[in-house]
Length: 284
Length: 304
Image 1 (cartoon, each protein chain N blue to C red):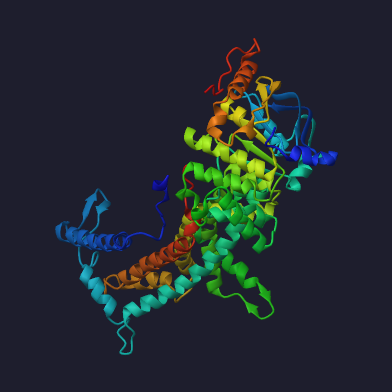
Image 2 (spheres, helix red, strand yellow; image 1 turned 180 degrees about the vertical axis):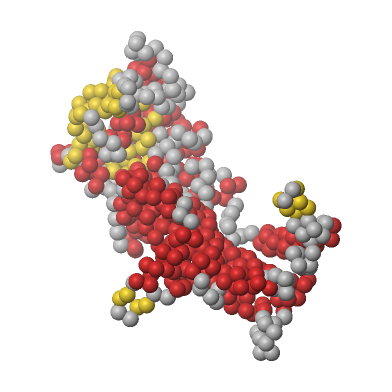
């Protein structure tokens, strides 16, 4: 956890040191004939500044859990607190930034206009907003494209704009639902390194949904492994990569610790005899 | 990555690409004139009938004047009087009056149609209650509606305001215009992707902010064709309503009046018909200008 300095800094105020607190949460989707238990008895605590990945096969409820934390959906039972307040209140107070698998940019707005959207909505002063937008465009390395429209950008660039947008209001919590899922492998690895840098610089906690084991291990302090039907947490794998030892992402991916953690997550995923094949999981 | 960066702008078309539609338009008009003359030359003078049903029109000068005769007649005087204005000017004046009424009708239709669409988007119950009525409204024949509107209008009185018969025509035009606008705007307002709606929700944006920042801009690609249809409907509504309310001065009434000259001056009745066509083209052109101004909202979102 060497790349999360804020965990230690913020323990002085215990009320806010927990970013996300999920208590005995379940979510049941009622159908006409049958109901589906997407999540069942989920308990999870995420510290401020911590990077946590949710991993599991399709249908394990990892995206549902993220949506519950974001208050885009409400749990059937249980409580979710974000920075000590109910999820709905946290959403209204803009405690998190969110990015989805699709960039979801507004096609009629330029790169700068898209990043400025949340700032405009919350009536940030013009000068402050434009300074922040410039800063974010530099952060994601799109300096030349500030006045380009989304259809002029590649998928990876669009996704970077979406991430910049999610950071616009300096949230202490980033919620990301497979944000790199649609990218090619090379772009993806570069974006992962950039995300780590951005998360470290901003000190934000990150909840990251993925179905790629190496991605989860590379990014996370802890990997939460989930299983489907009903969606449950089967195990939590702590990842202790010696990130301080190397600034080189390539080298990090080749450490033995990295492979050990990948193996641990993989075993956790396959470990349940009832579910021998974890379909939909990227084992690369 | 750089290949995707070529600036593709709606405005950055080459000159030839811009001129082409106009050339094609002229070519199609010429082609129409050629077909007209060709049929007039080749077709049987009495047309062709199966039993009593005439399937091909007569080709006499009375039924189908030569193209050049019709054009020449436009240059001639309106009437036999010595101080008569040229026919083309009279037609243009009538068309201008009808265009003005149609524009007012279109504007009313836009306001009413859009308001209905926003209400239907906001309240699902309104959609299920109002939409069938909106569709039903279009099944009422215009001819039946015109006298009703005129009678109701003439009873309106507040202060010095007085209902004039052109207002009845504008109301009837708006009645035809609001329908495609309401339906198109509703589709447009409902068009944003779930991801965009959830994004706005994550920003704790209210209904009004979501409408202004998301739904309105997203509705533009749906709204523009609807506005074009609305304009065409407003023109048709104006012409027909002029006839059925008996409003004089517009192109509709002129078509009716000039029909009397079919045997004595066969090229003359065609003049207001050309005027009506011109009216439709101008209305469509004005709406497409609107489309140019809103080009930014018509960008497709590719490879999200």
